[in-house]
Length: 92
Image 1 (cartoon, rainbow, N blue to C red):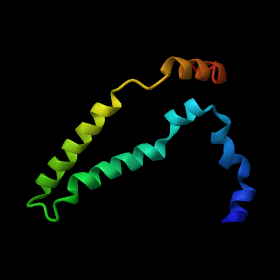
Image 2: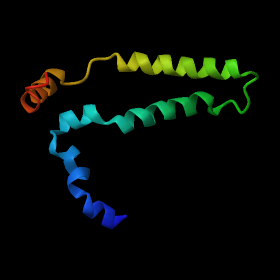
Image 3: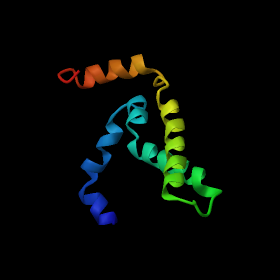
Image 4: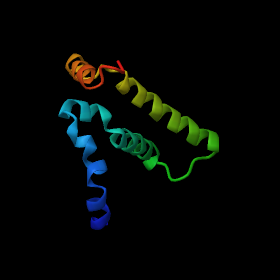
C-alpha cells in the first residue's frame, strides 16, 4: 500500500493544493458517510420491518431530514466563490 501511495503521491495530494474552505465544500466522502450514518440511525431501533414499504418510508423520512440540512447556505460562500473564480476563471 505504501509503495502505491508513493508511486501516486502527486495524484493523491492534489486535493490538498486547494484552500481549506474549498476542501470543506468538496468532502464528498463525508456526505456519503453522513447519509449512511443517518440511515443507520433511522433503522437502528428496529430489527425487523413488517414490509419493504415500511423500510422505504423510514429511509425516505431520514433522507428528507438530511435534505433540509443541505438546503442551508454554505458557510463563507462568497469567499469560497471568489477563490473558485480565481482558480477556475475559465469555468465560472
